[in-house]
Image (cartoon, rainbow, N blue to C red; front, side, top):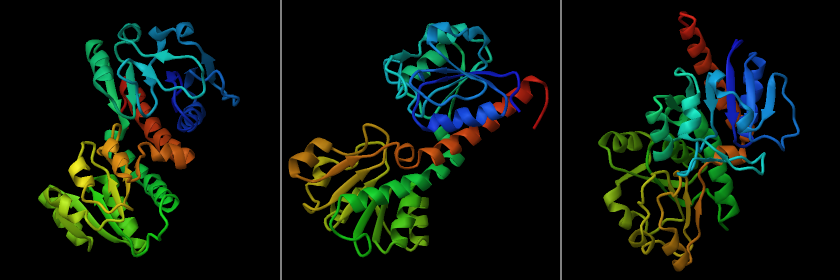
Length: 300
């Protein structure tokens, strides 16, 4: 139980509703900022404007998965007002206040460091990333079906990167009957690709391996699908970029060549917000419980 904890949930999409539901069930006191247009009411949760919340009493701040943009603005789909996280706001919180976000950036890293507040990036956790790979794969399949005129079965699919998402994508497309190649750099990844009975290749050979691709799925958050790579693709190739913004694809050149390229970060929140929200809620619940027990001098 989270009795006695005061938590500010600032902005977000439908995933945050599962977080709110879970934490109120555990008796936390929630302040919802950026939720004025939310019709649903939660017992133990109060909708407030930023200026009306006493942040000196807040034990934790929960931000949306994207955190903030580089100006400190927070995504708020349940409000028309712009909400900002500032250094001055964090300075008002107690020294042991923890900020939770899906991912971070230079701005959020900077203000948490300056105010000496702990920042936890949920998507850096293996459990969150692996659980989230499930709706990500389902969303990728949906996009592949919607934007092609051929079956996945028998198609030639190139997956770039064998991280937690790349592995799930490659395994699932193979299970659907696709002929899957996976590009990576690390020797252990090459070994794992071989063990999975897939075709491994080093990313330095991407220009050659992409020449017969029907679908290219990128999971690497740096530009690997460059103009010179796109120039080697068949005109019908579909690019699905799952990397965080701005992705790893030269979208300008893809458009110039007439190749359809889709940037699709955050698929779990689009195709399965309830499931994606439950994943975050369960992890946050455990982290907050651990923090509360630590403050009480207990161990879990």
